[in-house]
Length: 311
Image (cartoon, rainbow, N blue to C red):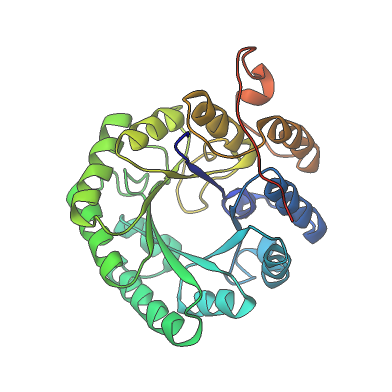
């Protein structure tokens, strides 16, 4: 029995947030359906932020409603504050991804408040969630965990401290995010091990950008630190509007292929994923997509198992 690893698709949120034209709601729904049919069980489908800031997500409530109609799929949505989280839960999101930054400068740019104030916001969200929507879980993502293009170095001790506070305030999963691609494998392994020592009872996940071509190496380092959930975006789409120089996420197709090649099980239809990646390029013809598998194809001796059937 192969060990299971979860690859969570975040392209619909982290990928589309920098696309400067509206991607149709019907196309977003097709994307969700096709990835779910390929075995993806956890997809971050949208963001509940003010429409004037990111009009791409004006259809957030409709997207969540659609995603919830698909069996075996957990639809998550991003929120930066209490109001956004409340809107997401009222729309039916089964998981809320609350983002804050370890970098004070980045948090001020992204959330318009200090990091400590964001931590208190999570506490408010947790109280409201427990009272109104106990069926929903709250994930906390710590952006710029490995460095920041605005601030520079982010002390490891500070990231560990933030993670511990988030766990105390009600986070049911904590994601360490390399928002600007500053992380390296040695740093990644050390960071996850230190956080794990501090909060052994909360699952950890990783979110890497491939800005400096170390994304998959960092996945391997996180695996060595017992991380088993990874965010990725189809075609390596993505970036951060408040982090100069940030490029796309690790490509979903490359990440799945590497994990399967290592003998781990993602329970994803790799052949179908390659086909989807090809179609995806036609959906977003203006975007500069990344990833190696779409060009090189799998090795001739590559094999994998996929047995999921949608109902």
